[in-house]
Image (cartoon, rainbow, N blue to C red; front, side, top):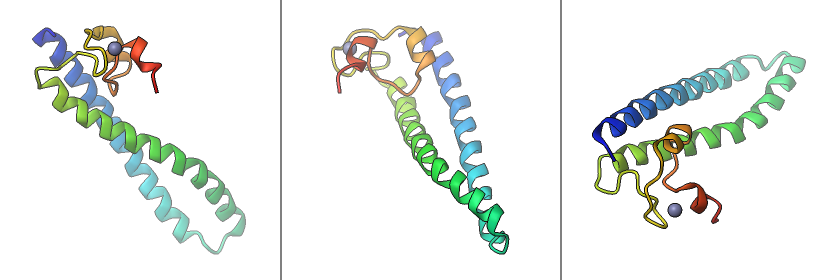
Length: 111
Ligand SMILES: [Zn+2]
């Protein structure tokens, strides 16, 4: 991979990590709000429903965050940009679209 491409990807990943951390911070505030609102049943129910949707979303965000920080290290290594399964070069456009991946499009289909 070209240094320039790696730099672009690193910046891209950093932005996404910042975004994810903001979302996680917001949901921490949300949980706090929920515990303060315990005397209002309707509002509480609303928050509980949202929270269960949220917990799946949050798990996904945390997974993405972990994969992104893993890929920050990957991009600093000699394997940067090579598919972890077949070893092919992963196109920059794919990595920009899915910065958490380490697989080419073909290998992404393999479970
Ligand atoms: Zn591959």
